[in-house]
Image (tube, rainbow, N blue to C red; front, side, top):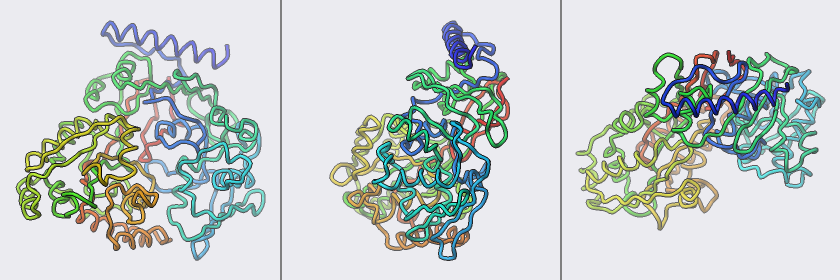
Length: 525
């Protein structure tokens, strides 16, 4: 019996048993096949081409099939070697020369070498490359500083940047920097995303649309062999259905458990994992027009909202209150001296009165659900109540996720006073550079939808991304956080603690601060 037929049979049997037992209200003994890990994902992947996707949901599959030149050290967001064994950086910070790992082959048997690295980055960045049309490449701006990729010899490659760019090594570790097989791209062209080939511990097996993506252990992997024979990623979009399947034994691992359901897994038979990550949930405030053009009113909103109550009552303790624009997961760059805005409605009322904004009407954009939004409708309702308690008249407009982005990303001018937003990032540069600089206003191609502007913040961010000394970068980011917290262009709400549940048949599983799902070491009994 082939792995695929066995996996398909085991999957169907497990799902059927889970439905039956779940329908009877009972609990299931282990039902999934031994040696095969069944993962309940939140959605169907868009593609399995790392250059073509942006969603963490897709990334969780990709990092098991592909590898980059660098990776995040386990348990941290610090960079360490992966397909590169080391690198040298020129004194001016514009040249990165990588020594590549010898003896690595792609899953199709073709060699990993400097030519393969050059192919990957030329494909992404050069519009004239013969395989550039396998895109689009929505996160290619991560590597927009790359001026040229040069093959020095078979196992040495050099990147020349147009200016010093400190996040470069971190961006190489992000899924957009994962290395694909040139031969596979040439063979499949635009269909490569359905026929992925990398160098990772798992190789692609099959993709059954709306049912499962199957990856199997790659016995020719250069490093430690994967602990399971196969992993099956099942798209189960409804959170309650994922919970029911997990309780019934139809899946072995569930990501993003609803806060209200975590208690169901507190007994024997399950393990709950939590891990803080580089996530911040915030409210964009329209600093260009309306009440929030006054800094005092923006500060008042931060005092008016009871973020502790949201974290504890709405999110069931699955987050911590945010103190500013940088998540604590970036420990080296995080400003620990900053305390969150306390809940102080009296101070909020005083600031509103001082600004002459009593009784102001606010239009508040809320999404029905989306990436990292943390129960957005209940949170939006709680925020509405807190703001109305200090004298505002808040009107909520609710949108489906993609429609919401279409309203918010082009900017709030002329439309709304505030909007929900959440980001998960890989470097302390990414979010503020794309969403807080004056050059990142929507009409300039950025995501600063509230039109915040402070020349000192601009100066600090430009200096930090070009500084090659990490201690100096940290100092610049911490100063930036102090200014942004004082200016309050956002309401800083929460930093999410990601979670997952595994059955007691799963060993060696852990969550990573990167929000990626590395399954190489996991064992399934």
